[in-house]
Length: 283
Image 1 (spheres, rainbow, N blue to C red):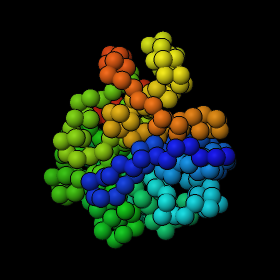
Image 2: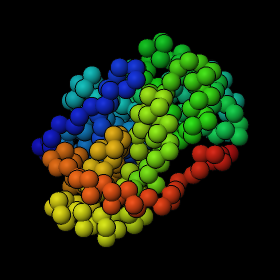
Image 3: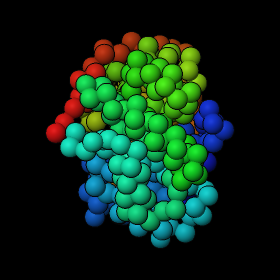
Image 4: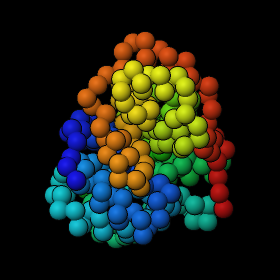
């Protein structure tokens, strides 16, 4: 496959850069992740986002290894699944980090995230302190969080003096998270959107978005991804269909105008599709 337009980078607060559009593999089985990631890398994606709980770090790592893309051209993210069954100590974090590296077949990570804050257990502070050690040791280039709310962000910054470079959160036109994005801007934290296309729960069938797509002669998914980019978000759309994988990266040859952005802003109904970080927990 031929590549599409090069993806611009976002500079993180620690000076490292991340492509503004990456490839996510949430809900992709391990035996399918090899094919999906191989396709994405051949098209031109250079940022790959996985997580321990996804169960596809092995297939993802195999695809990276066989891609022929130099390691220093890739940005690989995975996440610590801080399950309730583990007493989260520094050593437990280091063990899980090494396990993810082993499954991915990598010597270092570009970005390591705490997957959920789980504030009812109040162990995310211990985990974050261990993350700061991993970064200091050079095993991971950047450290961040996922699904954190302003209170948890301020807590770990106050605890350690180290600000997460990025917070990966549910974000799409039906759940635009404007207040959280404002806190990110205040603290110098990049916003990365998971489920940027709304998990296939009807967002892409919205007639308002369809009209904008027709206006620009683009697919509705491309309109939504372009909205993310013009807000300054980083997006990690997921697909296992080659033409959609390509389409999701081909979002740099046009721009939404002010009217488009205003119409899309009006779609925000505060409809969260995933877990609420304030209460989300598991056994």
